[in-house]
Length: 374
Image 1 (cartoon, rainbow, N blue to C red):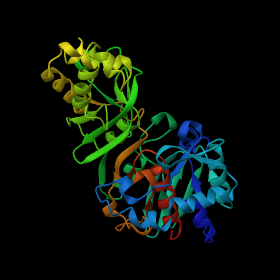
Image 2: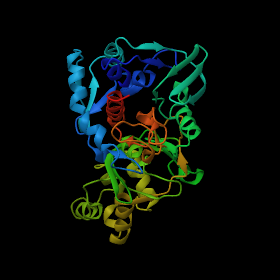
Image 3: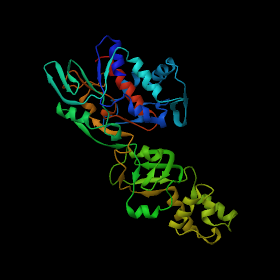
Image 4: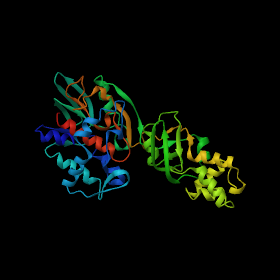
């Protein structure tokens, strides 16, 4: 995006790509269909130590601008839950579109960079394919999430080399894990899924939750994981929108001969209903279960408090939270204040979107903003 916009302004542009092919993370996104943006993208969908930083770029190149570009290229797409947009066909269509937009840009793949330096007004980039010089250098190398795709800490290394602060990076949009004691409690629940509300402080999401053999995943857990820090407790409502105690009291009056797990299974998967009832020692008939026990069970379901012992890390994280400190950069151009001609865009920067196409939208918007001035 940045290269295309700079080229349209008459700039000579060289893209040095470490991988054998461009757009590898686009290719695997959205199950191969690329969740390329979100209809509802606003600055509120992004995390940063400096939350106002993303406003300018997102305002100047919105999701609607990218959608128009997709439509101009004749790419069919569809909307899924929560405004997520996907290609009807392949994610390769988005890659091909971007390459076509970058007509006139030189793209060199399998380029390994060994050194970057600056002498007065020129940057020097030493690679396995030669030495290149330029008056402007854009770092668009993302974060270290999903290292098997070739991702790395490269952007942070270059930022620190030039004296810029880096907000400590950590995995985002990633499954959370539990210790052995909790996993033993969850034994048999791997694969169970249901809608849930997960809360951490003032942040709350309601989407699907998935039990795994390592802990918890699913969209709602990925969302909250970007806010989660080591040692923090999260609260999970496994029956959002339902007052469990009132539900169980009504059931006790109308279906007293039924077992508690059987009634719970009206709201959630049977395996989970049985496990929750067992945890609260409430597996008998409703008529024989005290209101006190039902209240204890309801509290556990509407406000299950758990403390993950970690996450699955960069290996499965969809993004990296943190990155180049935005206070070091211009929100208009993404240029480093202290190093004229040096720019950082996309995931390398401390701007992280929610799940659902927001991180791609930040990539397009920040790349476009930089391309207008670089």
